[in-house]
Length: 223
Image (cartoon, rainbow, N blue to C red; front, side, top):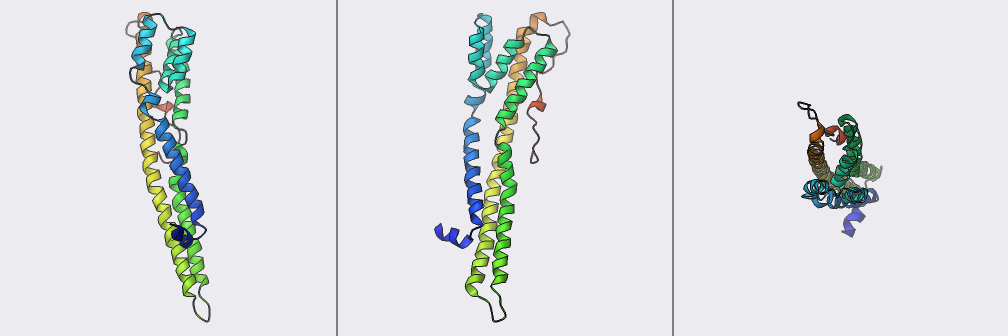
């Protein structure tokens, strides 16, 4: 491994740092986006039972908010359930956008690494080509410098691609997981609000989701 790093030249070090950063971000997101961390099973039912049993005190709602992103959304539904439907939807949408921003944290950085890594590899290729041309002189070429230039060019190109492929795969995977979670949170919030506000809703009133995919659709050039 040390010989590879030596043959790849100094341009390999930015790529190596990029790969370590990318790996750390992927591990952090995989850990943070576990289902038990984002949308614990049975939480919606527990919240409805809590309301039926009149245990929805401010302290209980505060604990629910700290439970998970799903708990944060449901806590907002409980706090705003006495407001008119439009006002409640606006408040829950704001919470949904905040949750979406939190869940998408670092995913954009992984996508950026997927784009930048091949460019860093290309930069290493250019450095290697400069070494290759520098090996030629009117009296003949330097075989050692020529070989070193080729090594720099090829190693950096290959390493840049090697970083970009898994970074792109995990970027797409994590984006899909966040979209799935946001859909689940939307359904849970709408179901909870529908049950809690059913007695006061006018017959035939159109049911609208409390927050839609716009809460999760943060701008991403790779999306």
